[in-house]
Length: 150
Image 1 (cartoon, rainbow, N blue to C red):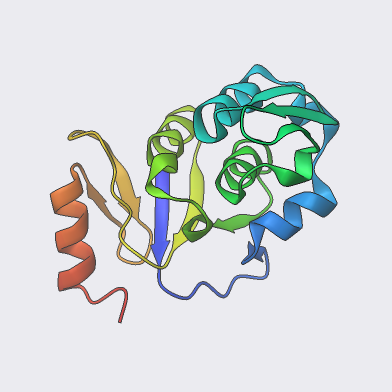
Image 2 (cartoon, rainbow, N blue to C red):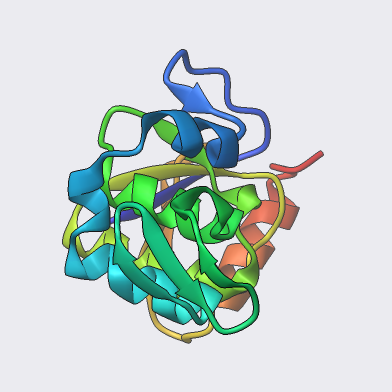
């Protein structure tokens, strides 16, 4: 299940800057997976050829370090169970992927804003309160009413 902590997260395993962390810790094995290739294709509209090459329609051949912060964050969330990532490094185009990853395993991320989730029916646990919400409106309502982003 996708679990979201809203506001300032202070755990020792928290990664505030997933873009920089990725550049220094990614595993080639992650980048050889079909999941990573799908994420890069969807989020960056690019082809992840292998751990050392991405082909972008805009930039041409680039290194893996030049993919978007959103794609980097999603790949880490999918493969690294040891850390809590700042999902505010992701745009709303990553929301569906957060749900997909959360459907395959328990995932805790931190958000400093209300992300727009594109589907109307999901299960997301608000880690701050323990409540489970099922729609974008319910999520926004709980975050605002409970003052989780004050």
